[in-house]
Length: 460
Image 1 (cartoon, rainbow, N blue to C red):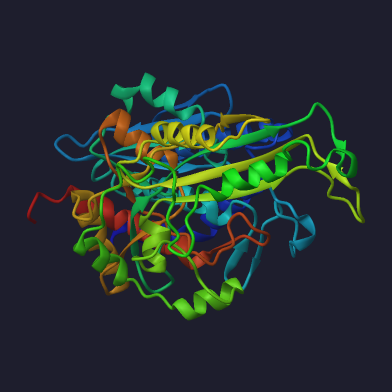
Image 2 (tube, one colour):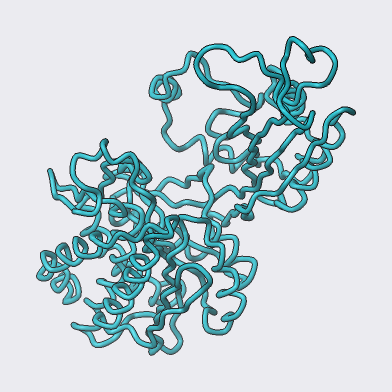
């Protein structure tokens, strides 16, 4: 065992206690009353980086929550990687479903239960501790390392683009390592190669200047709820699951045979999936498997629809307003701004006379992201995961969005390699979120192995 590995083993209890301290900070980025807590988490992260021996640590303020930067750049001729993660968390509601208070971390059965444990404080802390192990035993890192750790990921990273655009030289590197990712399960590694983009619109339909008695006025004017239902229904096909918005699919690249084989290689039990969801039948775009639709095909979903009377009993009202929220998950080559224009045009085309319809772009938007499976960073990470788990990793995608991956590619021209150690069953974004202590320990070894392998000469 190398000296840095011995150091990690000898200090594992201290590291665990430090993670518990980190998890006690109520860094909920979406709630304004926790703004000082998010800043406290930034300061905790910056101080822990300094203690590890990371240099040039600074807290970069934004209009919302800060970015913490640091680096160690004393390995001439070696690669430079930038480690990404986030120290903010989701809200904790509903509180009554937590076994223990969400910011009072509790250890049970080898698991740390707390909000932010899996997403993303546990995985974020791992590379900092690995850097400390190298610096305290060997006096140096095998490669050059930068850190970019943010406090606004859970609200869509709305100010991170400005930080990146204004600090391109500072953030230049060969590629990014994202600690905000995970492995397939406890015995199987995975590399995330695809993330969907996102965009959406809000629709408001207005009719008469006030709600009206449906018996007196019904049949004489358009009902905004009927109009909205027709507009929303016009966006989707019938049994084939196709999206009927003109131009929606124009830039979608077809899935290659290799991509479909890669997706099919990941174990998947469709019957179990259906049972877990509690539905009688799965549905989606024809010609694709369920996993292909979720991972690699664009979608358009109605997220909310409301208007009129919704209380108990009957109120014979003809409402004057109806509203809907729609979001689209996008795949590589689709541009959110172009899709928004397609949605606006579709709504306008399907708006009848007699009502006023307003479409507004919502604030959450990001580009899709896809990294080549054979990217040099992926190849090195795959070699480490193969050694760590005794078998090659799966190459997976997700229907979710991590905006910074596309941002780093767009602004810096660099890809992001997933290298986090959360697992899919750890209830992030839900009550009783947890992180496995075994993953916390395995991840530190994995980062050390990755640093060492990245330092090897090409072809070694």
